[in-house]
Length: 241
Image 1 (cartoon, rainbow, N blue to C red):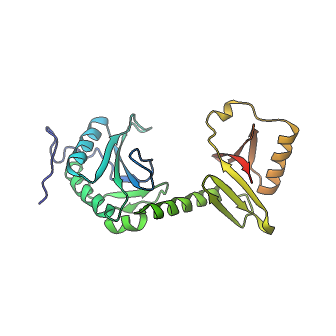
Image 2 (tube, rainbow, N blue to C red; image 1 turned 180 degrees about the horizontal axis):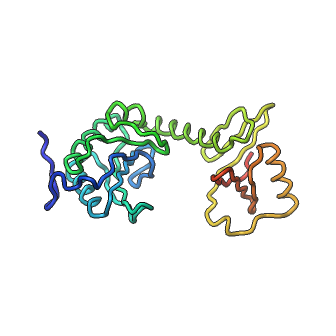
Image 3 (spheres, rainbow, N blue to C red; image 1 turned 45 degrees about the vertical axis):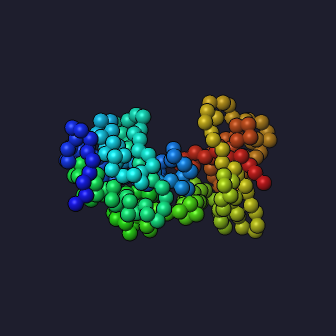
């Protein structure tokens, strides 16, 4: 039976009821490297002290863990996140299962599940599911994330009649019937809406044309930036060739 190093004053079962059984993978960005090379697991813990205890346990027992850290503050529910970073490789499924078996000694959790990236579906935390759901190398990661982003844009532009939507890095190419293509480059809209929108004739004409071609979106223009609103989502773009 494997022996675990447990911090002084901490005993098996001390974290029962303090750690949620559902964790996420690749929802948060890595601090140790590029996301295509490093997988980030995020556990939800009820308070900072038990999160620290679990972090120290993981760091002491699993040398394949690149880094473990705690969120700087609470989330909206008053919980903390414990982030565990691991190298993306074919060994990842077995390593995660090994780590979960150990943490179960402290938390009492036996039915671990996980969510991947922005997907709200949960999967049983077994090696087979990790191998099927989580990309285990950089090529598969970039392909999966690109596919998910493309699907997100297709859902956002659901008022648009398009043949396809293609991504080229931050550029979104909307391919419409009869060979018409509209290129939009995603930009950060931080603090943008604190300024006043363009009300000149050229901007008004461009917005009218975009709603005619793309559909009935709420569009505003700030300098060269176009803010699209669809239901409760907002995205900011610049026109591109």
